[in-house]
Length: 264
Image 1 (spheres, helix red, strand yellow):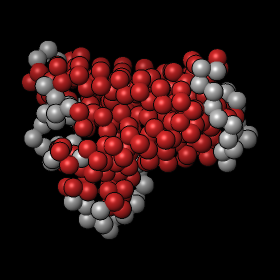
Image 2 (cartoon, rainbow, N blue to C red):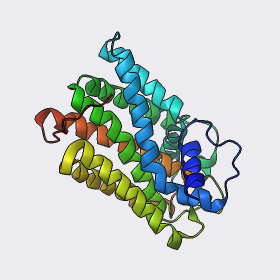
Image 3 (cartoon, rainbow, N blue to C red):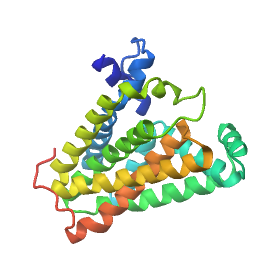
């Protein structure tokens, strides 16, 4: 059960062809939330390795661009696609039904293009700033933000209703009474990683980002009556950027003093 859930989390959140011959059931998909922060850590580790390699001979600006493109490739752009659909739906419709209809439309609207452009520009600028940090802070930041953002998706899955009867996120809502253990495991993983990387202030950052996820879920539930798979992806993207902003703004002033650790 645990291995199958880990396979489900990996194949859903990344482009890694892991466990292709394994047939996953609904419970495997629902309980996979337990491993979201762990998969986020693996994504962060991949970014860190790329930064270490390309940082040897490329300037920070180019290195940040490579990290951004790599992040999109690793995640298949799945979360970004959800963010774009949410931008189109929330800003392009005026009723709940129309917004949900727009979010299901495969065509890309002007609000999606504008939102995607702003998000990628901001994320690129933040990654440039991260690449310019001292080695220890840079390594810790690259490892942390994917962990926190994947934990934010777990909050959305657990705390808010799913509005569609079918869709990408429907399998996660079979029986919420049995998923609290998986959610607790995900929280423990995210907390341990945060504290290892940035001490107790790392756990404070995790709490703040959790509040951001809850705020997003509350607002969208108020507008749409519940969440969709697109909203989960949008939550990941927004929390990623918010976490990076916090790290870039506070780390230079030693609000987050990373532990002296040897990474790679």
